[in-house]
Image (cartoon, rainbow, N blue to C red):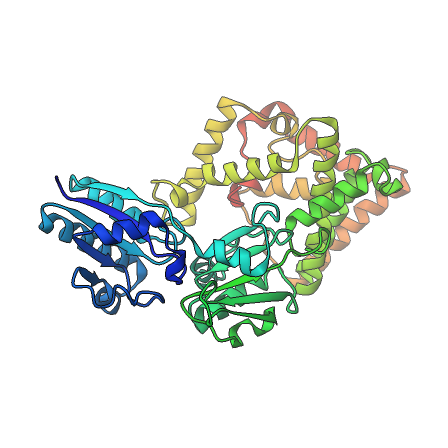
Amino acid sequence: MATSILIVGLGPGDPLLRTLSAQRALDDARLIILRTRIHPGLSDLSGDPRVIDCDDLYADASSFDALYPAIAARVVAEATALAIGVVVYAVPGHPRFGERSVPLVEAAAISAGLCVEVLPSVSALDVIATTLQIDPLVDEMQSLDALSLTAAIEAEPFGGGLIGIDPRRPVLISQVYSSTVAASVKIALTRLYPDDQPLRVIRSAGIPAEERVIDCQLYELDRQAVNHLTSVWVPALPSLGACRSHQTLQQIVAYLRAPGGCPWDRAQTHQSLRLAVIEEAYEVVDAVDEDDSQQLAEELGDLLLQVSLHAQIAEESGTFVLEDVYEQISRKLLRRHPHVFGDVTAETPDDVKVTWEAIKAEERAAKPSRAEQLAAHGLPRSMPALQRAASLLGEQRKTTLRHTDPVQMATIGDRILAAVEAAVDCNIDPDRALNAALSRRFPIEAASQRVNPKESTTGV
C-alpha cells in the first residue's frame, strides 16, 4: 500500500466533539502531524510517539504567507519519507473552515504523487451557533476571517471596497487571535457601523469550563481579552438603519418610488430631474472651491442620490438597474487603465494620455455610444456655452486655462459682462447666441474627428 495523507479536523477543542472518522484515522495512522499543539483537548496525543508538530515553523516564518507553504512542504516530505502507510495531518476545528494550509497540502501531495483525502469534522461555527443560539442559514450570516479586515486596514487610504460586509446581515468574524487584530477589526467595522454597535465576543466556544461570551460595544472591542479561539459576532443593523452602506441608499430610493412612497419622488422622471443633476454637480463644485470637506461629503451624497433616482426610474421601466451603472463604469476603468490592471507600461501622464486615446479610438470604431453621437466635438450638448467655448478654443490653441492675473481677470470679466448686458438689452439669450457662434466656428460635422479635450485628462 502506497503512502496516503488523511487531513482531519480535531474539532473546536472538546475531544468529545471529534468525529468517529477523525478518531479512527488518528488511531490507525503511522504518523500524525499536528499543525500546532496550541489547541485544547490534545492530552491523548501529547505523549504519543507517532505525533510531531509544526510549531517550530511558526517561530521561523516571517508571515503566514511564508508559514503555510512551509507546513505543506513538511507534511509531504514526511509522507514521502514514510514510504508506506497513512499520514494524518491534523488541524484544529474543521479542515475547510479557516484552514489556509489545507489546500496547499492537497496541492503539494498531488504534485508528489500521493493520495490525499480530507475528512469532515465539527467546526468552530457549529459550536458558536449553539452557544449564541443562532441559525447561520436562516439569519443569512456572513463569515469573515479577521485577517482580511486587517489587510484592508493596512491598505488604507487605498483600501476602499475591500471590506465586503452588508451591515444589514449579521457577521461572524473568526480568528481574532490578538489585541492587535481586534483593533484592526474595530477600525474596519467603524466604516460601516456606529461606535456603539453591540457586539458579542466568543472565546473558546464549545470547550467546557473555558467558554466565555462577552457583550460589549464596537469602540470597546480592542479592550477585550482574546485568544487564538476568539470570534466576534456582529448583529445586523435594522433594514434602514445601515446608513453608511450604499445598499441602504438604494433601498431607501426604492421605497420612496414604490406604491405608498413619497408622492413627489414617485412623480419624477429622467426629464424632470435633468436640471437637478446639473444643480447638484455645481453644488459639489462650490464645496470644492470653498475647501469645505464636510460640505463636500454632503453635496456628493446629494449627487449620488440623483444617480440612484435615475437608476430606480430606469429599473421601473425595465431599461437598466443600478448594478448596470456600477458595471459600466467599473469595466470602463479597467479597460482604460491597462497600465494599472494589465501589462501595458505607462510611466508618465503623457504616456497614459497616448494609451487612453488609442483605447478610446478603438471603442469608437467598435461601437460609438449614443452620447458620443449626440455630442458636439466630444463635448456634451447641454454643457454651458461659455464653458464649451473655453474648452474648444483652449484645445484649438493648445493652451491650459490657468492664468490668474487679477488685473487681466478683472478686465476680461468686465468685457464678458458687457457682452451679456448687450445681449440682454437686445432681448437675446446670451447662451443661445454664444452656442450659435460656436456652431459657425466649429461645424458639427467635424466632431467625429476630434477628441474630447475634457475627457482626455480625466482617465475615464
